[in-house]
Length: 115
Length: 149
Image (cartoon, rainbow over all chains, first blue to last red; front, side, top):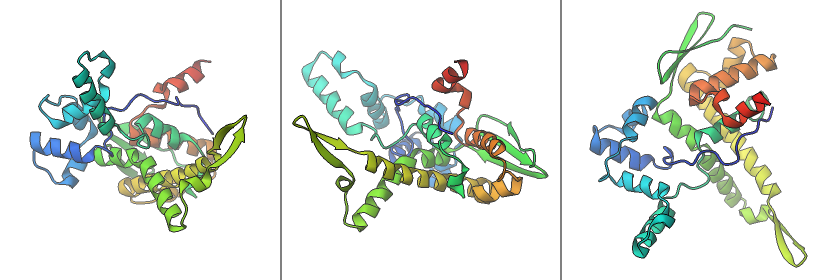
């Protein structure tokens, strides 16, 4: 049972596995000092709401901005160079998958994998 | 085969029930983190296993010359990588089942009575994955397109 999924799924802005330390540090700084276990137990709906409103002065905001910014639209040469560098440094490695891609992988194959 | 019911309680929680058993599947940061680390874990393990044998990924890439150009063939590496990803997928599914149902996926399938019914087990897996990832099968663009064709 092999299904087709888009080769390139929606671009990820945050990957919880890759950005875990930054997310945890942001959460503790902004909301509440939690243990890692407590942070991991937060429900995804609460997590998504709070992560979608990161203030501009947070380092995590800059990381996300660097992943989404169109550097070609920046007129100033130095500023363009700065954001290009940040974009390269903060890029989520290709080996980290989006949920859609994971879903595709989970759906591929049959239950013999589990036997 | 027992009837398995999936009922969404709220945005994060799904109740799964069969016979007199009830389980709550809760989508939290840990679950998302585990799933999103699937591929990187698989690749790291692959590279680690290769290093133990004194190999690198280059040992699985063959090259040939065609019209003066060097062409790399990654098919052997891709096959190997696929095996590691399948292994990591199985591991994550089993870990999730242990976490929510206190049994492995295979034990769960046996308990429900789905092992010898492939269409029922496929349907069950679709619902289980949806409960774990929150992604609705029908909302995946290529899938909807296939359905409409």
